[in-house]
Image 1 (tube, rainbow, N blue to C red):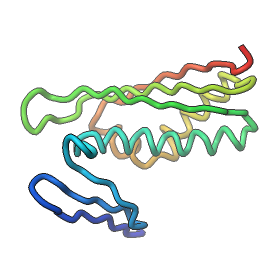
Image 2 (image 1 turned 135 degrees about the vertical axis):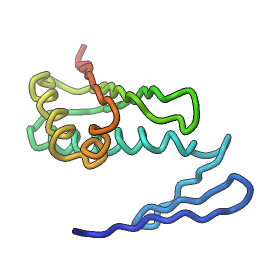
Image 3 (image 1 turned 180 degrees about the vertical axis):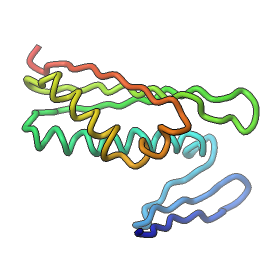
Length: 136
């Protein structure tokens, strides 16, 4: 089983510098950086979007724009556990086939996205998509 390491350096007060396994920096602080709790749904939609675009390219679907939103519900009391995350995919392209988009989303969510695979056992995950034809 491969091992991967990410890093955090405490800068000062509530300022932290995160680095992914390649060393890419992310600042975690408020108000001028990422909120730590937002990193979980951000990781989920980042993973899903990566897979979705790769699958749709293989299907020769012409995507010109993709936006993905994650709406989270968490407990009101500490530790503010995530209960639900709803993902909304908004795709723009030329002649996108809804069945192929749906199949690509399902492949990402059930087979390829490691974040989705990890979370689905403990968080209710749902999704929907919308297609806009750029020729309309």
